[in-house]
Image: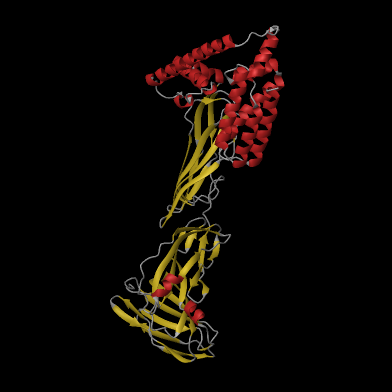
Length: 569
């Protein structure tokens, strides 16, 4: 037998029922409150006002609103249903009072009824505290498309508002068929008008992205309830979602993007593009939707350039209106030939749930012009060439007085006479220091005893002797590079390598890398020159690569040690 109290008021039916009339202390009492209104002129003005339920522990509650048209009478029927799960505190006959609601300025109520409770078990105070506090997850929009977000609100209910501060360590649900992203954990003001005599407070809000269609159950949210004597765990209700399939007719290249997006591609490098030198190409997807979980359009491979795995950067904010922002995919692209290059992305499409249509953005193309090394040199002005020579001189000549690298002239900057005058002053100062040094050296030679000089050798022997004196101790550099690699200080690693390379080139009186490669080809063989060229290219790729691995850097260091040990012999 199912107990119930039904009140019918013409076009308004308002009733409450229990699932049975006799319960044991272990049973859960399920009360269902139903308000049914026939006709569009009726308007529910207040929520259900529950009777005194202090003789029960409220385990959970949930509500749903439905609306449909009766085909026989062609009448709009609106139905509001609330279900409450109760746990009895006392045995015997317990009276459940009337539920109240206001419709069109008229108060309706249900008739009270009694249920019978047997065999109540005694519980400790800690359990009673846990039973006086419960969590409830409320999702208003339970019918969404696949990968379309819906907002969930976590509330806590209790008769004693002091219990709210004891709820801590909220754990959001995790499940394979949903993606959960928190909006905030900001607690709201306490609302004293909850169910029955209970107050409520919002604890958290989060977005739920279902990633498959069908009926999906959102798992319960858990939290800890800390008291002076114990620590217990409380869990919320579970919520079912009706996830609709996306409409048919999607483009072949549609993946899982749902929302409203824009796609752009641009070159983040400021310098002129040189063949076999890396550039930074950004693919940006911006808008609102499942930004954090969607498949981004990739850069297509091409024989005209080489492309590497991108570094993904998200600038996304999660709010009550959904997930907004932008996701950047940073690619390292190396042109293989001079001329006009067309860097293309994959085709991209998304489903817009607002208009319930697929939007095809197609393919995005970035047009760039690449130049050979000779073309880059020819395009430079006389002032730029002077600045480059000055910078190279200041970087390779070691001055004991000044740190000259701070006066380095940028190639792309506007011409600055002050900088030029400073560079000239530095050169004059270095020249004066050189003259002073030579004068001191001559005076020192005069006081030395005359010793028989060694017989002069050939020009080749003399050149060999000079190189021996200028020879760089590369082993110190190797040890330092190894320490930097272990510390993962890759910026300082590549700076130290540049110093090593400049020292070795200076040892052989070669100022540029191209001249040094030609020198190696003449004096060390074509294989060593080719190894030097390949290593220089790998250094540039690793230097600007967004992701570096310990294995790759270890292999690179081994190649540096092997090559420069061979060159310095």
